[in-house]
Length: 317
Image 1 (tube, one colour):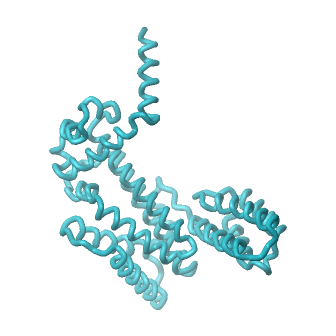
Image 2: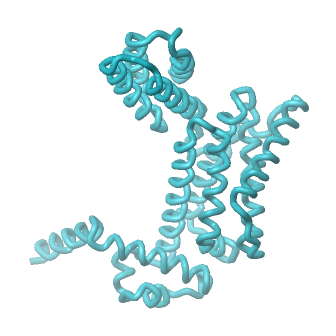
Image 3: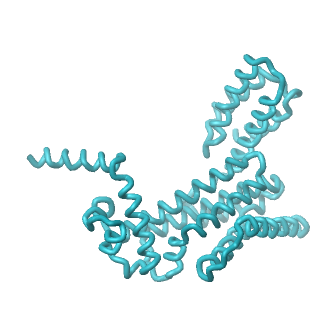
């Protein structure tokens, strides 16, 4: 009998987590975020969260064992959504990296202005961070450094690469301080204006670094020593460059006068190549195979983008 009950409980939980009650889980996270921000983490109770969500207190414990686990889930949910939107912005403007950088900054301010709850929770300063939350914070911090380092290299070119981590620190510091005025002082910025201002200051920093010819402060080795548990892939910016180069070639092929059969064949190769380039760790054998097929279909003299793709794939291999 106990076995049957155990199996039944397991099946019920799978059904709930598989879709029927995922909306309830999201509702709990939203209510918890709101209550933690308004009442403070220590003062908000599970009952407060249940009341705000309009559900029974026991329903929360079906998903989360404790208030601390719920806080961790709130942070995970927030950061996953934010980083996903930042990545989408970069991909949408892959052919224009500087506009992509503007959009990545704007995404953060738009998210903040629509809902500043998480930053209000963090600004309370009295939360005892669990090891899980500390690790999550470290992971997200590193992801932002790496994300903006890669975007900075795309915008300003490979010569700035040694200083890209330094510049990502400058960029994130500007973003963080302006966000502080939004959260703590209720200052409302036009997101486009603040993004353009921040990128202009980054332009100034790049020019200063180039003219001073000083050595970088934060090298890849230093960053790896600070964040040993998080992968800081040196070739990640090359992957982004590959995606952009393939995207440019796709546009060139679409606008060229090729036979339909030839164009379809080339486009299929490029679709596979772009799909692989969209991955954080593309398979080298797939890149090499698609490049060989591409070179067998069209000449590099006809499409100079192929030379750039070849060069980047060689770097990755």
